Length: 229
Image (tube, rainbow, N blue to C red; front, side):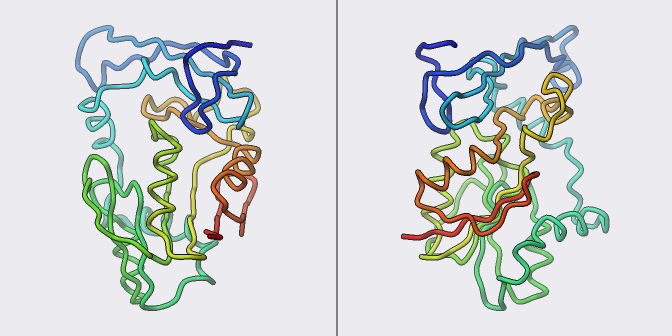
């Protein structure tokens, strides 16, 4: 067990085990030859999150370059269907005239586009592409494949919950690290911007410490929390 000043970005614990060390070749994004970065992954003994050493995180500019390579095309039928599948657990809870936030929307939000067809207003928030958001008391927040990018997971959770009205819902989709047969070979950390991974135990920690009830979990990658205070 390692015990020092490196803190878990979710719970703040300084007790964790080294899970994995590997070299990332960042040449495709930086265009520098042989641009390898060592990544160290730690497993938190308190909340069961797995996180990357902060000193290994990419610069803001390189992160933006990586995000811009993601194929999130508003005109793509395949991507539209994918996003609608992601929020299917919310379907029965959504009603016309609701207001929601796509938290970590990227440059453009398919969720906003698709839910407008149901007379549901969705606002975009993304620290790189849509950094300003002045809302409160919304009905729901959807955080789809963004948790794994968060530098300060606790701060981002605070931000999402502050947006919600009482009994508002947060849907978070990010694959559990417990789905990996061998973390070393898991595909989900092949993206250098993926720096935090959770599990059902992490969900339980969040529920208890943020006063959220768990309304839904598929034990794979999707959870719906309800704000209880």
